[in-house]
Amino acid sequence: MPPRVVIAAGGTAGHVVPALAIAGALRARGAEVSFAGGERAEAELVPAAGYPFERLEVAGLDRRNPLKAAHAAALAVRATARARAYLKRERIDVVIGGGGYVAGPVGLAAVMKRIPLLLTEADSHLGIANRMLARFAGRVCLAFPIAGREGERYLVTGRPIPPGTGEADRASARERFGIGAGERCLLVFGGSLGARRLNEAAIDAFGRDAPFAVLHAAGRRDYEDLRARLAQMGDPPHYRLHAYVEPFADAYAAADLAAARAGGSVFELAAAGLPSLLVPYPHATADHQAGNARWMAEGGAAVVVPDSELDPDRLRAEVERLFASPERLQKMRQAALRLARPDAADTIAGEALRLAAAPV
Image 1: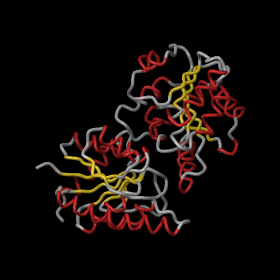
Image 2: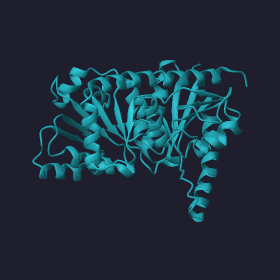
Image 3: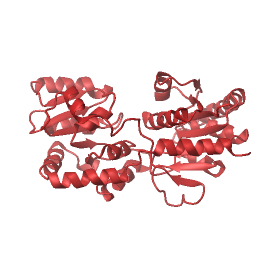
Image 4: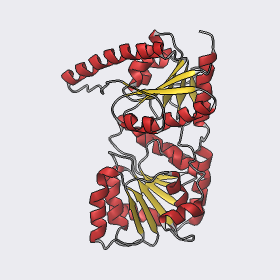
């Protein structure tokens, strides 16, 4: 009978996308995989990927509002009870906590049912659920080394990335976006809620003119406003604005340089061998994007511009400085590839299956 695995992940695509990569690696090894999650990104992305999905009602813990905190705690208690019933009914062999509010109740249910638990951490600090559950986990897989989280329980694996990242054909990708074979291309993307400042700076810096192509994935929220601004600029042909690009591997393959936030996508930039100018989102939990960006910069793969210093003039100057030095860009490409961990999903899948097979 194949091992049965449930992955608890949700809240943002930053948690769900790596979890889906792990799920794919588990399926390739013959495991049966299902997900538990809430009402946010996971409710759309997981069913679309073809995995069974157990919906749980959860909410974030708002420490500033006692009433909301009490409500979240009550939801967590109910979600834990429902997760226990689900794990028993489905005869789950191992639980993977992939981050987000839902990982806490499902991970706790696994501990209470004496089901092996593996945790993954995509950021440069442990989230609340992982801090609570780490002592009970058979393995904690870290994207980055974290001070104080060393020893047998912890394993630095890197962050799982979508299949195909770094493998797309450059010529085909450039043909898709209408970018010439010898034309330089800047890729701009920011994630979701934290993207607006970077989105607006890019339009102001490069919208009217630029001596290179700009491929800008702006996200659904800002797309229409940015589209209108480009129309006022005469819809410049060098500027390709998209709400999203799917698969995003094509965007990485088409570009020579990226200007981006510094979430978990830093591992995708590394796998694609793409030099980057990173602007960490200053309101990210525990300022983890600053840590992500620092890791890339110290490895030689990125230049970092603090959000407080970002404006159109600074953005344009930094990009033009990098494009003016092909030798530096080549060194940054090589550095990015040295940092890459393209095997992260498969490594984590192997650890999960090892736990599932171990005697209780």
